[in-house]
Image 1 (cartoon, one colour):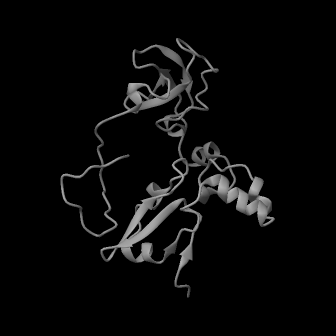
Image 2 (tube, rainbow, N blue to C red; image 1 turned 135 degrees about the vertical axis):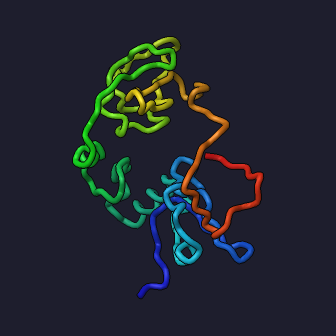
Length: 189
């Protein structure tokens, strides 16, 4: 069998103090460390991440110089394990869509969503509110989801205060090191 596996994830790995550390990728727009949080020490030690120190454009440039046809391939925005089919189509096969209101934090009704499951916090595109721009004309972003009343809350502008939080509630924590770090702990999410 193979001793190592190389993946195309934009992450880095560093061996320090007899521990393997999973680090964010060098390209801040392509970091995928969140996706590999479940790896243990042995799995991480066996993994190679050859694009982790590169920016996406550099990967494309290298692919073009090597004559790879994939250098001009459109970026994937889906989930790699479901293949080329659209994300909505995949979810619709397993979860029934439940349309509901799209509102501002003040309660103003802006439109209707097809289902909370189709939206992520911070999402800007595909909100289905017809390109509506109010106030300063800034685009709309998903600020939160209220499953108790099936409501999608959106705000205008990438720097709106509702898009930022000082607290995070987490469960089912997995420490790659095998044990929790010393508390207090400074985190970014």
